[in-house]
Length: 73
Image 1 (cartoon, rainbow, N blue to C red):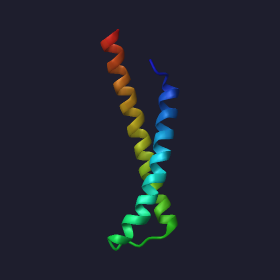
Image 2 (image 1 turned 60 degrees about the vertical axis):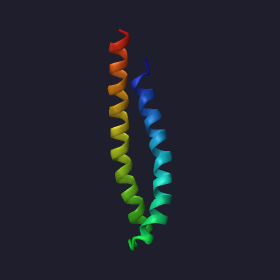
Image 3 (image 1 turned 90 degrees about the horizontal axis):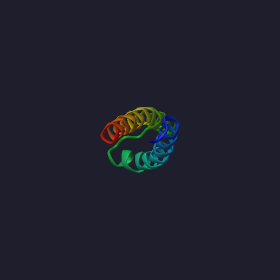
Image 4 (image 1 turned 180 degrees about the horizontal axis):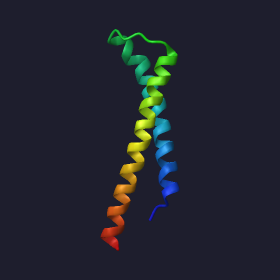
């Protein structure tokens, strides 16, 4: 069984890598749709979605871990 702290660390690393990819994608995709915003706005949008993603990833990890423990317990 994975410890809660390990679940959080794994989720954070996953999301931080995703943040970098998402930021790069925003910088490429937004202008092609006529969306022109400052770098600070791009960073803030990415940060907000990152927080949402961390919570989602951690919650799903814990949920699946609970099902795994019940199935094997």
